[in-house]
Length: 414
Image (cartoon, rainbow, N blue to C red; front, side, top):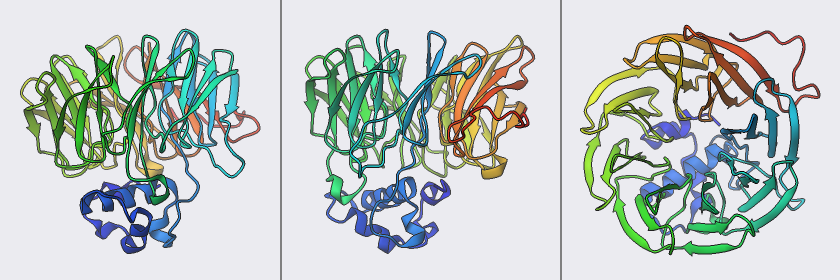
C-alpha cells in the first residue's frame, strides 16, 4: 500500500476513484465517508485504485507487537501469529490463523496478551485465543472484519468490527467477549465500522468509528453513555488521560473530549492531513502522529502547539517513549519507502539519532526496557536497542518469509 494514496485530503491523488467507488456502493454513509472507505479499502487490501479492479484483493496486514514475560507476540504479513524471544528473536512458535481454504488471512491489529492467552483478531472477522504455548483454545466468529486488535480488561476482551467492502455490509459492532470461553457477553450494534482497538478506562469502553462518532459505552452492560460526532472518520485508538479522551480524525483535527460529558475541551487544527494512529501522552505533552509526516507536540491541558517535527515521510504507526541514561526519547516510525527510519527525538523536538530501515514502517512501536520492536513492509520484524547515550543499535531482525529467519550475510542497519 502506498500510504500517500489515502493520506491526501483530496481524491485527486487516486488514479481511478470512480472504479474504486463500486466497492462501497450501497453504504448508507455520507459521500465523504464512502469515498474514504473506497480509498482506504483499496489501498489497504489490493491497490485497486491504480489497477481499476472492482473486487477487494489479497489483504496484507501489519501488526504491532506485544511483549510479555520475555516473548514478543506479533502478526506477520503472511497471516501468522509469531512468538519470538525478545532478546534474540529466536522462534518460540508460529501459527497460521485457521481459515477456510478460499480465505486469505491477515492480522492488522496488535495481539492482546493475558496470563494464560494470546488474543488475535483475524481480518476474516474471527477472534482467536491461543495459549502461551501456541495451542488454539477457541475461536469466535464475529460480524464484519477485524482491523483493530482486541483490548483486554480483567477477564473480558473488547473488540470492534467493521466493513471494508460492499460484501461486508455497512455496519460495525463492538463486542465484549469472555476470555475463558470465547462467548460474547454483550454486543453494541448502534455503531459504524470500527477499525481501531477499543480503550478501557474507569468502567467505560471508548472507541471511534468510520461514521465520524466517538462512543463511550458502559463496560459492564454495553449501554451507550454518550457519543460525540467529529468532522471525519475516526480510526485512531483513543487515549484516556487526566479526564480527557484524546484522538485524531480524518478531518485532520486532534480532539480532547471531557470523558464525563463527551464535549470538546480543545481541538487542534494544525495538521494538513489525516490522523491514522493513536496519539501518545507523556509528561504533559500529547505527541500526535499525522499522515502529513509531522509529529505535533501539544500541551495536554490546552491543546496549544509546543513544537512540531517534520519527517518528510508519513507517520502511520504510533510513536513511543523509550528511556536512555540521558533522558526520555520519543521513537517515531517514519514511512518513506527506501528512506524509512526510526527517528529518536528529544522531548524538545530535536532529533538525536535515526536508524535507516529498508521499507515502510506501518506498525506502532512496542517498548520493553531499552528495546523497541516494530515491523516493516518487507516482511521483517525488528528489535533495536537504545543504548545509554540514546543511539540505536540493531539487536536482531526476523525475516518472516525466509527459510532462515536470521540470514547470516545480512548487514546491520544501525
